[in-house]
Amino acid sequence: MIKLNSPDEFHSFKENLSKTIKKDELFISISNATCGQARGSKKIVEAFEKAADKLLKNKIKIKATGCHGFCEAEPNIIIFPKGIFYQHLKAEDIPEIVEKTIKGEVAEDFLYTDPVTNKKCVSIEDIPFYKKQQRVLLGDNPLIDPCSIEDYIFHGGYESFLKALEISPKDIIKEVKESGLRGRGGAGFWTGKKWKFIEKEKNPVKYIICNADEGDPGAYMDRNLLESNPHSILEGMIIGAFATGASEGWIYVRHEYPLAVKHITEAIVQAKKSGFLGKNILNSGFDFDINVFEGAGAFVCGEETALIHSIEGFRGVPKQRPPFPVQKGLFNKPTLINNVETWANIPQIIKKGGSWFSSIGTETSKGTKIFSLVGKVRNTGLVEVPMGTTLREIVYDIGGGIPDDKEFKAVQTGGPSGGCIPKDEMDLIVDYESLTKAGAIMGSGGMIVMDETTCMVDVAKYFLTFLQDESCGKCVPCREGIQRLLEIVTEITDGTCKENKLELLKELSIVVKDTSMCGLGQTAPNPVLSTLKYFMDEYIDHIDNKKCSAGVCKALITFEISPEECTGCGLCKRACPENAIEGKIKEVFTITQDKCIKCGMCYDVCNFNAVKIN
Image (cartoon, rainbow, N blue to C red; front, side):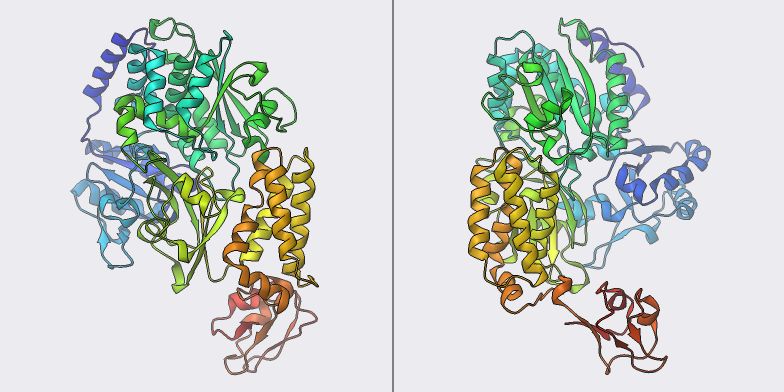
């Protein structure tokens, strides 16, 4: 790694890289981010390393990269330049793949099979999960070693920063405004407008912050970018600092993201050694440095003023605005805060132009958006689509629909502060205004799919429980209101709600929404309000009939064994932790209801559909 002291040295360095790395070179890309490692990708890397001599002899390189996006298919690899995709690999599969790759053959046993056409997909471009995506930010993940600044530069990295140095800060902000980029952290505020506000501040000391405190259950877009392409975030921040006059930056990332912390920290070290951070960057007279701050995992610290308090060494609680952070933020100085995905978009906008970015998406929501598609859907993973894509396209065309022949029920967008959208609204386009109108929010990009086995009242209870735990307790509407909402919903799921309290539930939700101080409280009632709006019949069924049609709420269900279908195998009895099942082998078994704790173990192990939920 060499220190680059000028744009000319940068161009010479890249030219030399082009002599050692070829665009069409044959290499094996191994998905090795957190999702992959959780399913054994480290063993895949080790297996390929054992075969390294044989591969290199045949001019085939190995590259452990970040996430390829298709999490359901982990561990997976892509063989470039043809883009051959192999999924669900084990270490013992690698020798066969190595031999066939050397011979130029395809190992068909490991290819992805399209469940609709039953065809094997050889190339990544043939796989439905990737077909409808527009991977502006995620596209380089399989090509780049996240721990290699050379890889990033070879694939166009830091060229946007050099372009930014050639134009004025005002022109940079103009491009960002023209792009129509809105903050990807949830609120959707216009990025260019925010940059203009801080650029106008006269204070000689300004800061910028990357909000990587991704706390939504099921959301991991920011973690993926930090793990897979950390230099793209750094480059965005450097451009932002140059445009607004900031001298120092912070990346606020939760401690629970160890691989993200490791990769972004290493990227900062590399950027400093290469001359992209520090004093007099590339002999431009521009000084800028970045620090990493690890948060303790408080959901409320996703709110920018709470995040600022945390960096300053105080308890992470929000404060009243105005003044806004762009006026008085970190250490009482003007501070620009954007989230990970927003910063990663900046190099793309500067490189290709604001008008290019603005040509993607809808009238009011520009560009692409990354969603973490999880839950009751076949193809779980990270999905990057143009704004304006419908929910149906995301869930069915990309996600592959609902597994096990179950019926789709709802999709929850926006995390705990979002809302649940039913199947009747599946043709809703995904943009800021449409989701808000439907009773949900964009949020940071979490998207949880639910099927017929999901109880929507229980979903509301789950998110209220999470938000009650995560509320900082500073303001009364949030502290007391969420607790009372949770009490009412718990009464409903427990079957102890003696009178219809749905009007009270709705009224209290609106009060909490309208009077809470920060975004956590203001959006906390969304799961309740959206489920009341679209699934009122389930609430009424719970209250009036003491019935949970999804068979989820334990107080409202019983497990029984059908005499007609029980074969007397005894599996249910062996699985029961409370000895609540009686009977002899080859005879009909029965459940003693007084002993049954409704754990569902008997239901899970029965191979003959004899255990029924009533």
